[in-house]
Length: 304
Length: 193
Image (cartoon, rainbow over all chains, first blue to last red; front, side):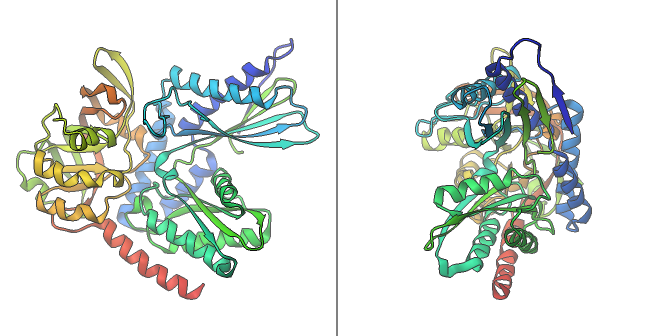
């Protein structure tokens, strides 16, 4: 589903456009979960056989319907605002200003709605403002040559699932088996805490920090997508099957559906490294995307 | 499905519940979270609400201020219980709390205090805040507003749930059983990797 906002005739104010887009994306992501996720949750409800698990999935379904009909938030945890930007080489606004616009859009949405403000100083635990603070929101950047557009994806990340993040520096001799074991033990250990059934993101290769970033990138992918590398895609399917054999089930109460999807992102690595990172995304896997074109038009895209 | 009204006056109401039962809750529930309990137990500040027979909900609600000390719900949902497990024993022993409700399960260290003090842990569906908010009729009281949103909240509820008894007052824990069987399953999976 796509909707477009067309520019005024005079030269567009890109700083304002991006701020508006961020404010819209943040609230939109919190209220209206993507179709791929809705389909996966409906499928889960139909195939779950445990009594408690089925009940949980029915309640989730009712909850999503109520959020739609009342235009309310799906979950009260408005998360920590995470954005991914793909910036074209010729996009008219510099990333330094894009960052400001994302920060101000996040703050404005928080105050105007109002949304719960979650951001605190990590030592004093004092609130630092309307979901903004030192280095918050968190923005990841990718720069695209020979392009003049901007893609922004907003992923408000809830703490229940973010707390279930794990990193292991496996050694090369642990092989792929070590990767699989670590993902499995992480998800079993997490139990009901990250609000299963959700999306398991796995980052492999790179360095310790980059593996964790890749795991985050993986949870932000639509359910049902695969890594383009066939070897990695095979690992995704295998892990998905194995994770659902564990019986953790919806909300950790036992059942057939522990995860809706398992996504793996990879980077090449050092010959003596074998990092594996796990990042969990809850069933309310919120995300929303927009594309800002160089003519100032903004296209909101539910499926990205 | 059973119905219970909180605060309970007859401890038997809670003792009759068994792990896996589904329950609908009426009456009043108390919202509580990490910082609220740190203030009570680590800083030794007496809570300005009666917790005897109470149902505690692990929450930090999204609210809109509508007057001095008066709030209306925007989005009220439930947070991960496991972070707060160490407060279970003093809540039962010192304050007579009878039910704790949250999401994500309660670790095994809660089993013994829940049995000793005749309490239960209710599992709610995490993330289902849109639904939960419709079951909150009113925010009747709030204390410790300086901890916003981790204040001490008193909600009047109607048909709150359905909740699933995750741990009963007799030592049975759904979460313990699920973990045990998952660990066995892992052994089996590892053997064929």
